[in-house]
Image (tube, rainbow, N blue to C red):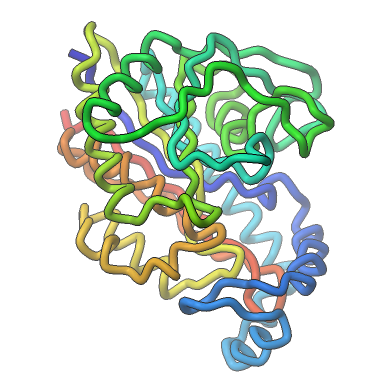
Length: 326
C-alpha cells in the first residue's frame, strides 16, 4: 500500500520571481480590472480604493517594505524546497489549475494528465521554467489508477492523454504556470515521476464547491492509499490564499482552519469568497484530507501579505507543509 508521507501548499505567484519594484508595475494592470473580488462581491479599482482608504496599505508600499517581503517569500520557498527534498518521495500528485492557458474552448471541472511526458521551458518566465526546453517524467500508471478509483467513487473526470498547446506561450505544449512553479522552485527541475491534476476552481460555471472539493480530496486520499506497492507519495497543492485582492483577515481565518483540519469552517465560508485567485484554497483540501489521515501537524513556514496598490490588490503568500507523523 502506498503511503502519503508529505503534503505541501505553496503559492505560485509570479511576484515571487520579480524584483520588488516590479510589484508596483503590476498594480497598473489591477487598476484596469473591472472585477476585483473582495468581501463576496466584485469591485472596480476606484470603488476598492475608496473602500480600503483607511486600511493603511499605502504605508506598506515603500520600496524598503517591498524588499523585506520579497526576501521573506524567497526564504520561505527555500525552506519549502528543503522540506520536500528531505521527504525523499517516489511519486508526487500535484493539484493546480489552468488559467486559460491550455483550456480555451472547454473547461473541465476535474482533469487528470495520464500522458508519459511533461514539457516546460521558454517562453515561460524564469520563475516558472528554465531557459531551455525540458522534459519531465509523468506517471501514467498512477494516473490511470487514480482515474479508475475516482470514477468509481462518483467523480466524472477528463482524461488528459496529451498535453495541449499553451496558448499564452506561443502555442507550445508546456505546462500551465501552476505546475511550472512547482517543478522549477520546489523540485529544482528534477521532479520525481508525477501526476498533474487540474481542478477548475477559477471559471464558472464548472467550479466545484468547497464541499465538493473536500469530497474530492478524500476520494483522492483513498485512491492513493489503494495504489499497489510500498511507495512514498507526496501531495502538493499549487495555489495561493487571498488574491488578487489581499485580505489578511480572511487569510488568518483560512490558515487557522487549515492548521486545525477544520473542514467545517472551510466549507462554511461563502462561496463568493472562493472566487478569482482565492478559489485556489479549494486545492488545499486534498492535501488536508491526506495529512489528517497521516496524523501530521502543519508547519507554517511563513505568511507574507504582498501588496502592490493602495487599494490592497496583491496576494497573500502562505507557505505550509505537513510531514507524516513518526
